[in-house]
Length: 75
Image (cartoon, rainbow, N blue to C red):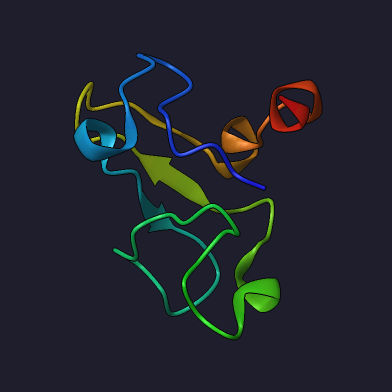
């Protein structure tokens, strides 16, 4: 699962509006979803080369930083 809150500024999903901005796939500009992407081909898109952009703080960071903490998911 992916956290939709910005890992840098902690902005909530409605402010952060996290978007994929680079990667090795044809999905640039797709809004990040909890499962990675809102497509049936999500497993093909989730690679270590994807970068995400936060509209709230203008930060650009690797998709891996959006991975939700397993302890957090259990709550």
